[in-house]
Amino acid sequence: MVEVTIPGSATLRLEHLVLDFNGTLACDGVLVDGVADRIGRLADVLRIHVLTGDTFGTAAKALADLRCAVHVLQHTAQAEAKRDYVAALGAEAVVCVGNGRNDRLMMEEAAVAIAVVQSEGASAATLAAADVVAPHIRDALDLLLRPLRLTATLRG
Image 1 (cartoon, one colour):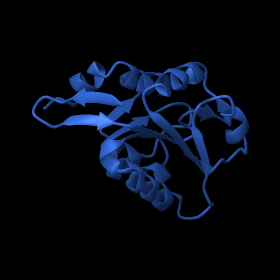
Image 2: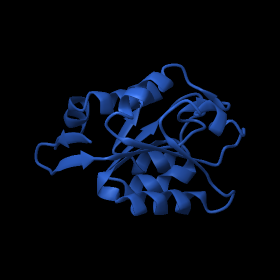
Image 3: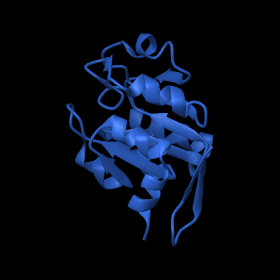
């Protein structure tokens, strides 16, 4: 569990990290440098779930050596599937990270939503739904490895 105290708000007790794959953890289907190490460290304190449309068909292989559950979604209603997955986990204990338009609904559902803007860009609707916008996935994951950064960003 990662505990984040937000002055003027509730203390968050995060148990699950839900991640998008392409555009978030990977670029053109290839895992971004530095992601594997960070996921390895976060897997000690969070249950990690990757939800993906798997555009390039590489997610399972790219994540095979990491402690995370990989779920390839159907090609339709991906936004709803991601939202429903977060809700089923217990949204109050979920932090999610994504960039695409199909990540917007899970961002609205999760206790903490982090949008990343990398090579693939990010959906404006998803950015608007996020609690935090990070310039890179490494920075987003570092927020969870160093939760006082989240405290500083989210304080009222």
